Amino acid sequence: MNWQSIERFASFPKMETELEYRITQREAKEILALRADLAALRARIEDVEGMAKVFHEAYEILAPTYEYTTRKESAVAWDYVPDANKQLMIATARTVSAWLKEG
Image (spheres, rainbow, N blue to C red):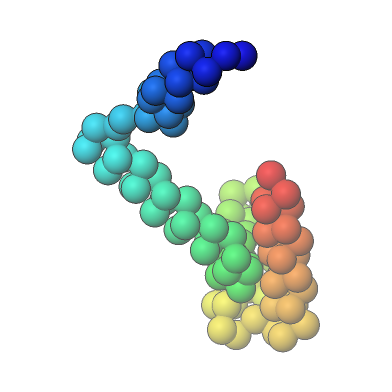
């Protein structure tokens, strides 16, 4: 390579400015909204007790539809679920949460 070639090469614009990506304000807002949605979803996946509570409530509501009778001790509002049963549901939700994170 001679000096003239080096000088010509040095005068080219940098690649990152030539290939720079430009997005519209609308696209930027959409990206920010998607990031917020993703953050909210991650927070819900992390809330294993909340997930267990929703699972319990849905299970109790849906059981009769499937002609299933749940135990009287656990067929109560989340705050009154026996502790051992509650801890089992939280552990199950934690397992589901880990599975969702693995993606």
